Image 1 (cartoon, one colour):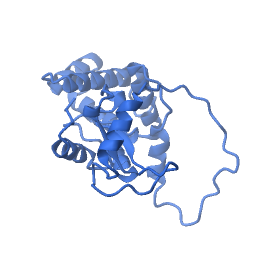
Image 2 (tube, rainbow, N blue to C red):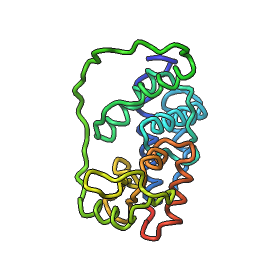
Image 3 (tube, rainbow, N blue to C red):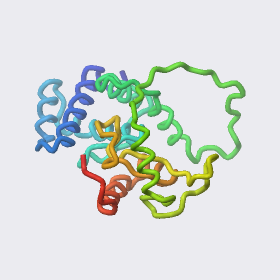
Length: 224
């Protein structure tokens, strides 16, 4: 399967990671080392190797624009094939199919800085049909959050970058605890932000710091 890890080992690591994440979100006390030790005993690897693998899982979650566990800082030393497998196990275990992004984004990062001449690309890219999970959202929540922002990004404070086709300030609504991570669709978990901050909350190196600042700045937000 690549780098000596079996599919069973990898799936068990992802399952343990997601279980830890669920307990952390629920406010339960978790000893991560106990999970590493249990996996090490089950598969005959060192506990440290499973800790490193979970840091790879954090990295794949970051490629997906998802939150990752505190104390398991993303490690990017994971191949594109392995990244794709980790993402597929995440989607399968959570039973939330989504369009695959990890392998592509990993390839992009590996190719940055390599090309002096423009690549040829594809004149007729092939289309793919994929199953994804969509969450039902309350339009009243989005409308209220947008109105409460009064045309200014609730993250950086700047004015909306443009007016939409209805002449309204364009801002995007972001769930601070993502719906994919079990977050609620309520005004206590949603903010109106500019596209730049929205991308930052998903992909920035300091995304966790940005989230912490939102909880301090916006009184209606409730930590979930």
